Length: 312
Picture (cartoon, helix red, strand yellow):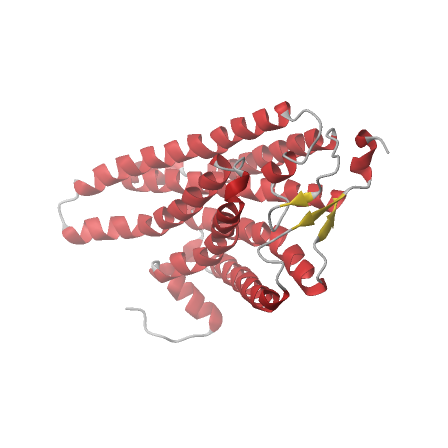
């Protein structure tokens, strides 16, 4: 069979974390728990924001979109991993692999851009409070989310179409728990220069450029907060940014680390652990980070769940 024709029927093997059968029940239980917690936690955030008019502000609008993206993000990879563990079959069809990569790139890009808009929102709120209602109007917020979808969908579509032109020879084993783009590209026996070029260019555009914007925003934010005369005022201003900065640190710290070292096959285990951090752990922790440090979210969740706990 000619290599160029193999992509239509080719399947891959996802090695995952362990081929030892005695570790599989533990891995299955652990990742199933993280999946359930992530979906329920982020769904509660969306419902709490949607059901309370007080939370219908730009910051919570972006947060609800981030929670939706996180639900979709983790649902792209973990269910297939759980199925493989349960059936003891680690295969994925070529179509399934391409589909998984497509949605992974879409929702990964959405996370990146939404975190950037959230940083911009905090920058305007703290550095230009008098102009905040005018600048962060509903039209702009909706436009920013729409632009995020357009960018993410366009990149994922272009990269997917470029993947379809590749041929794969005999190496069908992906040293990962999902079809990670860089790991699949190394299996191709045709020219992948365009794919890698696009990967690195978009990693810079959706990684370093937004991160630079976030760092610039927080530099200005910190400078403005330090000018506030009262200690209470400074603490309140810092508290509104702490949750977002924590999430940014987790997401970018692990995500960029994975893509910067994606070609190093000797670090595949470290790459998988880092991938778990930004594809599973970060989406799982987001609801806790925002709800535990945000009094408005606390009240909304307590009201939604029927709790009557006193909010300090």
